[in-house]
Length: 291
Ligand SMILES: CC(C)(COP(=O)(O)OP(=O)(O)OC[C@H]1O[C@@H](n2cnc3c(N)ncnc32)[C@H](O)[C@@H]1OP(=O)(O)O)[C@@H](O)C(=O)NCCC(=O)NCCS
Image (tube, rainbow, N blue to C red):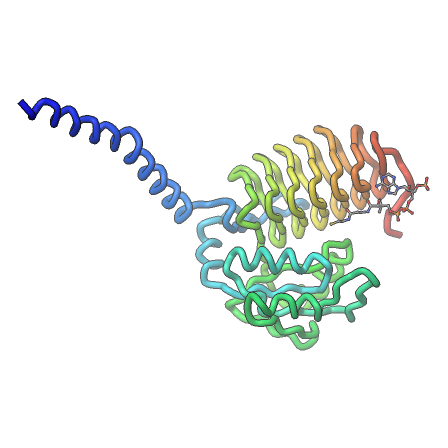
């Protein structure tokens, strides 16, 4: 007599487990497996040379290497250092050394390197600050450039003249980089940024926090995209271009080398090399092409 309701109850429990519990567990296990095998948002190393068009995407190998390497060395000081430090913390890396190539000259409203390093003391050992002339690389280190200004070109030259270093591609774990995007050595991608499928970021491209790069857009070496900017798809951005905070670029645009797009600008047409563009729609203000 009591068997029928009992059977019914067991069926109900099994049904519940099958419908809710098991799929939930399976999904979590699949997520963990994904993270362990291939996770593009974790850290990646895709070599892409904008000049030669050669690609060498090698995520799993790199992932193994970066897991072994726990120290991050930053070349050059800038106000963005805290973001690099923050990203290192998120990856469980220690910023072991800051290598200075020039004497630090903080402006009135800047925070000095000493002050920053003091703040970091609460989160781990303070990095050593050494002069480029006194620096010796070691096997357990990853390397990234500190400054985001066009002076990075000279800094990288000074480093590569001395050492044969491979720069790290540092992606904040809270960024999303499409597996179909390609990121060159030395690229940084900040928290909450999204790099769309088919996007290509050249050497040392700096993507700040909360940026979106549209599908199939290519960004040339040493360019930087500041917080909250949106770059439409299918565009070709030159090298050493600055896209300032909160700018918007429509799709299918060609932006010349060294162009500077001012804060909050809305770019609706192509921009010549070295043009400073401001406003909505963005208008030419002056040339900032380096002599
Ligand atoms: C483009 C930029 C560099 C201009 O700075 P600047 O050369 O010092 O310009 P000035 O302050 O001398 O202004 C020059 C003219 O452009 C105008 N202007 C400057 N920036 C402007 C902007 N973003 N939008 C609209 N007009 C702007 C000024 O009103 C001024 O106009 P006027 O000649 O009619 O008086 C600056 O606006 C900018 O975008 N800086 C980058 C901000 C940023 O992204 N920082 C990083 C944060 S993480």
